[in-house]
Image (cartoon, rainbow, N blue to C red):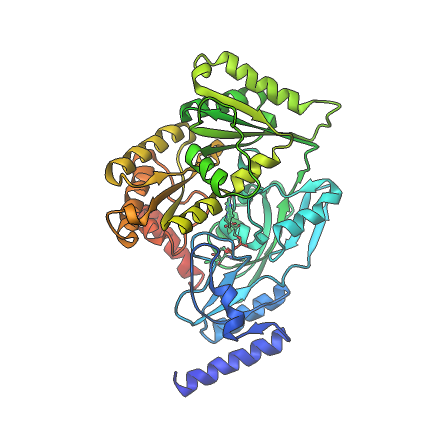
Length: 476
Ligand SMILES: Cc1cc2nc3c(=O)[nH]c(=O)nc-3n(C[C@H](O)[C@H](O)[C@H](O)COP(=O)(O)OP(=O)(O)OC[C@H]3O[C@@H](n4cnc5c(N)ncnc54)[C@H](O)[C@@H]3O)c2cc1C
């Protein structure tokens, strides 16, 4: 590095230290490590990490970095799954962590909204909302920050009832790449005055600016939650069940998740504190469907468990093939043990792989939900024909057409190294999904280094032109 460049770097560091004070700037390698390594994917190298604690400090950090020509990279709770949460490998990026920007949580129970800092964790927000009988209804097996959730437009398991972050967002405050702070913290539920500026920052991974605060819609906490696990012998039966439930009790349905037989088996083998829900059944299910009902009505006004049982029974009686298709239907109070199984699938597959020298290749894809069963069957056939040593362990949010296709194999049984197999399998599965089923190669985790090449493969030229023009407009 030239002396001038070094002086400039030292000057920026000193200015940041003066601005942020004790613990606000990290430069020691051992301190940087946790910001450089992703939850599942991603490994980079930071120039330094800053931890501002107010929106004004974020704006000043970005302004200073911009003035010194230093690239910045935002990081939330680091739970993202596409390698986008961490800095790149250059060692040049200033990582802006939002973990200290977590003091504001202003609840308006009448308006059913909350204004909160970007660094507030989902769990922290829900803890503050609970005494008001409210919650932020995006539910997932991780604890992200609100800013990270906006930047990735997080979906979650109850999307079929409440929608994703985009559907629950009223306003945003952002800091643009030159340090300009823009307050669009609207509390309006209706506002059709042309461009909806905040949407530029939803699901776009912080490329156009950093989220510093958000105004969110929140929901009433349910009084009752009940769940059942329906084992079926084929995916089409699962889709018929979904249709039946939406027709007969749609306003109560809050989750409809599918767990394939191989995914369930992996949890039974490697998960902690699990018992087989279908232990007495004469057949193994191809899919276990987690059906959840919830309501704000108290049990004295409506027995939700009874309604769920009646709805499932009515389906078994009405569906002419139900006798062949249904393995068993099991209940468990609020469904805690079923969600416990659901949330342990990825870790169980990873555990199995590490124990047996295996590989897990994950896909986060979506298709029109009516075609979900057909799509997974076609994916299974395609894999069996070209790579007979792999297994498909899929699970996902079937009510919104999302599925996690996990392709699993033992390295010793594979005919080629993973480095060769991975791109070939990815291309085949994504092509099937996007080109043959009009699906998405990234249903909920966003676009990052992990799947950037597929954005290039499938993005329409007009969309790319608009995206690049916006990036230029924001100086990126
Ligand atoms: C076990 C597990 C289960 C999951 N389940 C789901 C699921 O069901 N549905 C779902 O949608 N996702 C799911 N995810 C993915 C993940 O939780 C989300 O992508 C998450 O919301 C990201 O938030 P974060 O705070 O961790 O952000 P990070 O991972 O730190 O960052 C994610 C992206 O946002 C950018 N970013 C972070 N903060 C800001 C900010 N303040 N301003 C601008 N950009 C910012 C980062 O640069 C990065 O590009 C799951 C993850 C795990 C580990």
